[in-house]
Image (cartoon, helix red, strand yellow):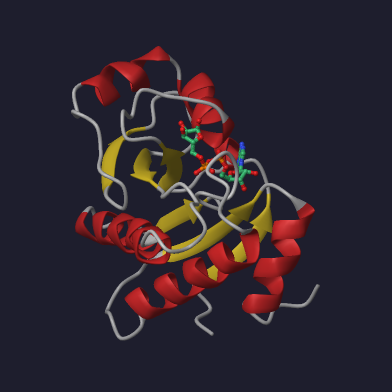
Length: 171
Ligand code: AR6
């Protein structure tokens, strides 16, 4: 496993990385969960910039500044709503990770933290989502020349255990 991938148990709004990823909705105008926490901590300027972006399709990603957050940028991505698994959810969730990474590399970022996209309000089963997250990140970065360190930022102890097992890290 790449040493540039790690997992932590933390509030993503506390992380002083180059970019944190937001699990947003298609409007990009804020919401609950991690999206609400990011907008609260970033301050109202984030919403002003988000308004100029014209929304975001499911699976896509867009970058903004991070304003009052300790991170430098926020990459907003829109995960799929879980509808039982037959509505292309896995492909769309994987696209969230890959498009976020693509943006991070395009902006020459060196550190990026992901929340567990779609596993809260959008209802994606956490184990399936974590397997897609890890496979997508490892698959995307494998064989690429890059300096990007990726952190999976788990908000719950349960998610932390799932990611540690997938990444073969000690519990
Ligand atoms: N830091 C890290 N992870 C967090 C934090 C935090 N501060 N807060 C929550 N999580 P969710 P979704 C975790 O519901 O399922 C919003 O209304 C949480 O435990 O934030 O993609 C948007 O506007 C879970 O593991 O996002 C959309 O409408 C993960 O973040 C909708 O929710 C994702 O949970 C998106 O739903």
